[in-house]
Length: 425
Image (cartoon, rainbow, N blue to C red; front, top):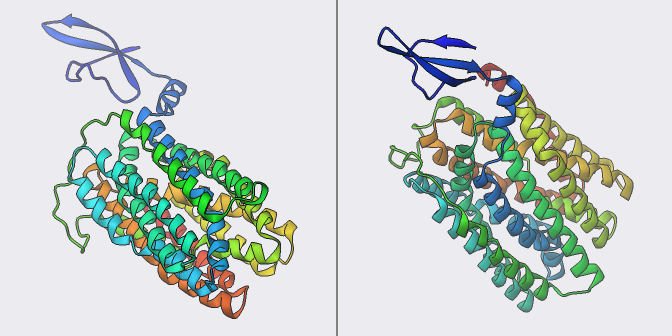
């Protein structure tokens, strides 16, 4: 315990708390006690109600989405789509909504409260899943492309403002984003189980599976009704595509992340390859295994990034992606695929939430929505050429997409580690 001069007010200091005050020569002196590191760490790891509610929304929405996603490449193939078309759909469903990430990030940054943006994005995704059932009824991949793109447009609208809400709710952003990602991916596990049961065990057709997914998606809107959001700071900058309002370091990191995503093609290519090497129902179980790995490792990787540096964890994640792609080049039977889907889940756990936390650390609060919208747009747009290249290469030589992915992954791992080491953050 010690006495600190009255120049400090009763809000306290970092690592100290007020124990009382005394009068000395007409000057009030506050008495402070130091908080133990264990207590400070415990307090910092408390999970905000906002993060929990947003995580619950994502959990329910991911149940809805992941009933569809592992079946989507096989559904598209069943209605006549070639690997190039599947790569096109996998890229366009993300890339066509890239501008929405940027626009949503900017305009939600102009608002003190971002819940309405998050709600509208989740609503659009739920409604689009009902439209996807129509494509199953008429067996049309262009209609599937339309409604799948609308589904991802909903993600484009909600993701940047939602991430800004998460970043504001905690100072331990690697941990906070990791908690949200773990809840999100837990929903993916449930969804993958339901996809397997509905398709393989209960023999539902694609139309009824997609309809059920849409209904579940609307239930994900309920937690948003009870979420109470405090006012945040507004972005004072005007809209500009030059992005000069963002710190230089954040733009370089966004560029390096985008470089990696130019080789990070749609997961549907991985699922198709697994289906070719085994059977569809086995590929569904492997997808479930991937989600278990993803959910289990999200919080540990997020917390680790807060301690050792986010650039180090991202370099590890990109290296895991490289190893996964190399494994797909040489694998021809089931048992190696088990390890490879676990590795892919570890890669996603190390990269997805940590990328967002890294960008959040590099920019001030009033620019976070814009910065997060920028990175989501860049990644989404990079997915178009990556997936088109992978689909084209798969039609020529089945292992070729994975050679391409391993090459970009290894280069990106080296660059993100080298530049991140210079930033010392």
